[in-house]
Length: 87
Image 1 (tube, rainbow, N blue to C red):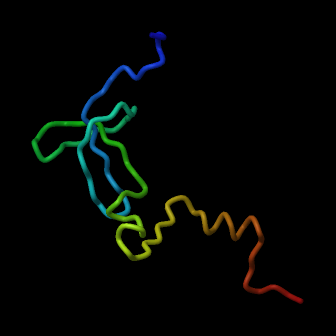
Image 2 (cartoon, rainbow, N blue to C red; image 1 turned 45 degrees about the horizontal axis):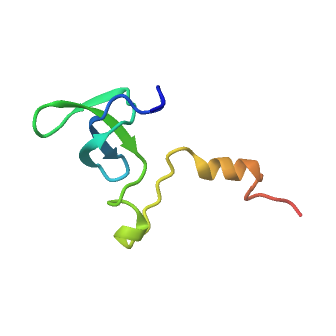
């Protein structure tokens, strides 16, 4: 087996969907910097998600627009869309 290519820590991690305030606990090797308390009173590493099955339009059947990083503003600025254009 090759050395230093496999994740070293396989542990419980809380994944939190920030768009709909849904969290779940599962095992993962993902690296995190934050921690949170779970319902069992123990503290676990926390990883924040932009979207999960509770907020994705495919699973919910409805559109949920979340502009977390100013994507619309970046697009408008990039292509210089203005409402007061002169012909």
